[in-house]
View 1 (spheres, rainbow, N blue to C red):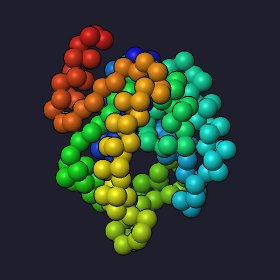
View 2: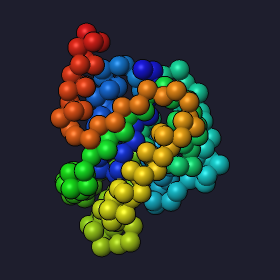
View 3: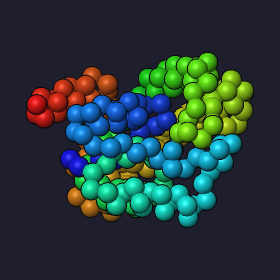
View 4: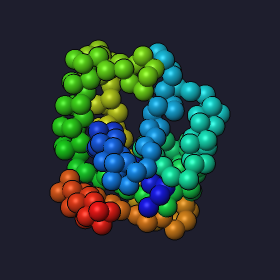
Length: 179
């Protein structure tokens, strides 16, 4: 397990898992959001985004975090392991709500871009991350299942976790094996 991609609906815990795996496996985590978002919540041009992802995935070892279809060929095609956090929507929404409220009040600078979550953007706009999660949960589930089933991305070691308990158990066994 040297090239890992972690996917799941916004708020499922991809970044937290990447941090834990990075410590356990000594692999550098790469957030696709950090490669995609520019200051002012402007998306990178697709050519720039693909260049950044191509560069990141040329490395020997990595953990890529994110779901961007524009670069799935690069990420999934170069990964050896895919971890899908396929958690129930109520759990994802609860986690996302907690994270969003924390970020709104902490004024956390996301990905060193100067971008911050705000009450207005998070709760009262069509760009709401909560609305995005609601709209994409079912779609992501269908898309990931279809892409995995297709075999297009080669012989990936695929790990699907449908509960935090199952994920914790796997992480504990992985940590024990690494020790």
